[in-house]
Structures are given as C-alpha cells and as structure tokens.
Length: 183
Image (cartoon, rainbow, N blue to C red; front, top):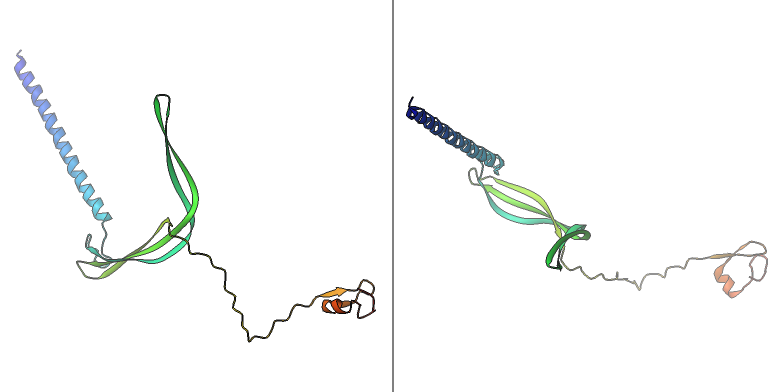
C-alpha cells in the first residue's frame, strides 16, 4: 500500500476544507456588509415627504428658547501621588448643584430630492457659566400728587371699663373716653 494516494487525498481534503472555510468566511463577510448597509439605511435621516434617505441638507440652526435653572453636575478630580516607590492615581467623582441653561434648538432642512422643507427640534442642557446680572433693589416710585395714605388706627382697652379707646387719643388725653380713668 502506497502512502501517496492517501497523502494526496488527505491534502485534497485539507485544501477543500480550507477553501470551504475561506468561502464561509467570505459569505459571512458579505452578510455582515449587507447587514451594516441595512442598518445604516434604517438609521439614515429621511425626508418626511418623499422618504428618500440622505437627501436632507441643513439650511439653518437657531436657538429657539433658553431656560436658566439649577441642575446636578458631575465633576471629576484626579489625585496623583506617590507612596514609597509606587505612583498612585485616584479619580474622585462628586455631584453638586450648579446653574444650568437648557437650550431648545431648531434645525431647518431642505430635501435635495423633492425640495420640501423639514425641521428637527431638540433640547440640550449645559452648565451655565454666564455672569449673573446684579440684583438691584426695586425702585420705589412716590407719587407726590397722590393723597396721603391713612395710618392704620389701633385701639387700647381700658383696664377698668373695657372700652376701646383710639391710640391717638391716648397720646393726648391719657384718659378713657368712656369712664375717664387714667390709661
């Protein structure tokens, strides 16, 4: 029995297996490329009128509104040092309240295929680094021609008869108007 045909058959089987693996990998690669293309097509921005992908051209971008407020901001600090011969590094994260600004942004598009306009609106929140305007005390406007406002009138009870006496009378007379007792 000669080893030649067996070796040749074995090598033919190995080459056939190798070609099969290469073809299988090639087919898998083609399927991956087709899947990536389908994924990109499904995620592509489409015109809301004609539904063609990748035809929207940005015309303008503007801030529609801004709202100032407070939000939670995460800050990171890196502490670097050495302990003996080894260098250490720690990243510390902390959250704090900070002034924020929420901007509503509108982006206008025009379709290159059908020419119809479209828009997209979204909001972004960022930390607000703008200086705060100075807080001024409210201005009091006094009308000189207006009649004087009357002072509220208060009353005192007489400790003997219980009658109510206006407080402005008490300052002058110091006597109860009802019984004449000293207040």
